[in-house]
Image (cartoon, rainbow, N blue to C red; front, side, top):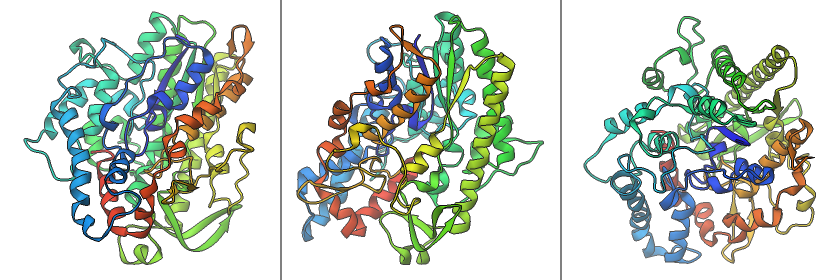
Length: 484
């Protein structure tokens, strides 16, 4: 097997609040450059889980055009609910339900990532866990503006056990890695976990940190016990042993690898506070060359919303989250160095995605991001950046283009840049294709730009999110379904 992928939403291709486009994610682009055939992954009808915001906005645009007029607001919620109902029907009771095997007979995928996964979920989340959670969430009726229940577990179930084979109910992401390493061998492992040990802080705009109790580390608890605490930020003292366990398991598994010339490419954790979902408002402060804001609230709201609502992070909160993440990355780099020392040769390679995301960030760099884009970006028009997506009523992209509508996850173009970052490290590590070093320039940027529907066909009704908080508030309510 030329390539196997472990990770979370970023590795799965989560897009605009849904697990929809694994075909466009960075690992699939890398597999294409590697000429890895087959490289199988699931597709997600009806926009995926929990809800595809782009699909919602396209439906609104199809019905109302580029703006919603006075009396039409009476029907907007029903229009949104119609989209959600289609997804609920498919995933709770239809062909996508937990009782129906994935069509086509695929027993496994080459991409085992699923959205919402923390580091420990790489071994704690199994099909058995998913089935238990889905049973507990069962409801006899559809809720208005509701999404498929247990969406996180429904996604993980179909990733880990697409044919619902009872013999595989105990398998995890690590379990599949071990299976493939022993069966046919894994030449290149893409490993990117850790973002979800901090990401919910900017989704919930609050911090609930793990206690750093050496007697009860989060990853030592049972899955459901750990989940019951609602932690959204791992203390660095809790993150370190959790990631160390992951690295020890990966090292153990790869030592049994049938492929002798194997490599592991390990992504660092991005600063989640740069996500455009968390809008910086108020006065700015420069700290260590980076720009921080007095408050962070939900896009597109302004400072008064941050002052009068509970939805805010302070400057101190944002700094604390970033400092935790920097410690996470220190841990990852230290563990990779130690693993290579034990192996006696470079086997593990850092892909510094934290730096890449930081360099791309528009506001964090005071509108002067230093990121060096591939040469294909030099004369593209319209230009893309990391700001929250916006297009005008004529269908012209005004800003954004790298991040999807959930304000956190990259679109197809953003995934192209992630692939670019991985491929540069893979080239330097000596990965070959047909006897020659893998070439990051082999990415087909024309196809990537064309495949990004937010860029190639901008949403004309986006103005309503900017000009009418009613729609923005309704869509923000769906964030609660991110991990149920």
